[in-house]
Image 1 (cartoon, chains in turn blue, brown):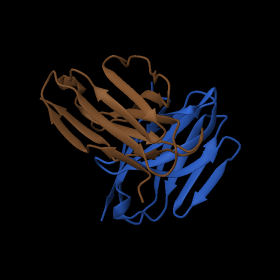
Image 2 (cartoon, one colour):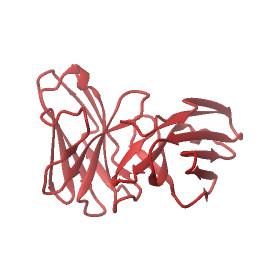
Image 3 (tube, chains in turn green, brown):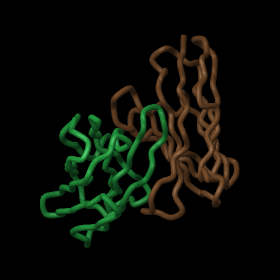
Image 4 (cartoon, one colour):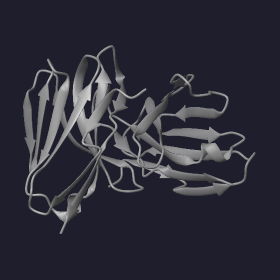
Amino acid sequence: SQQGEEDPQALSIQEGENATMNCSYKTSINNLQWYRQNSGRGLVHLILIRSNEREKHSGRLRVTLDTSKKSSSLLITASRAADTASYFCATDAYSSASKIIFGSGTRLSIRP
Amino acid sequence: GAVVSQHPSRVICKSGTSVKIECRSLDFQATTMFWYRQFPKQSLMLMATSNEGSKATYEQGVEKDKFLINHASLTLSTLTVTSAHPEDSSFYICSVNRDRGSPLHFGNGTRLTVT
């Protein structure tokens, strides 16, 4: 079963704008990860944030984690057409760190 | 370069036939591999965890006799969809990670179409 939900399900923005995606999860976790998937392809890991971290940056990506609310957000700044993809959050269950469960995903479209 | 190789990338088969999908870890030995299934515009659903040298661990609702998993070596896991039906048509993706809790590396997926 899926661990979490993401919103929005779909997001369309103008190139250059910032894109924010949110993820909520249900159980305690060790870490939370964000992945990107281009249509018909496998997923690519973007960033991992541990349960004791609140914010993490990687290039144009900024991830926040609020364990009290069981939620995370992914911010992509200065979006580019090449950022068009689906974005998924994924969590490991605290009790079973080997299993990684994915959220429902956000389909991001960047308009040129 | 690619960390995980998945083959084939696309397969079309007739109902009742079996299809084997291979997943190879190219960069490191993997005692555990994960098999996911993805329907169009939906998320990845974990089907099973493949364990080298022992039985796979299947998620609730996944038929182990339908989806046979073999993890005979530290670099290869196979998923066989037996007696495939049109409802088995989907995108199947394997993944590995170096350690528990570390990022997953994904294969490019296999698009299965059962006619």
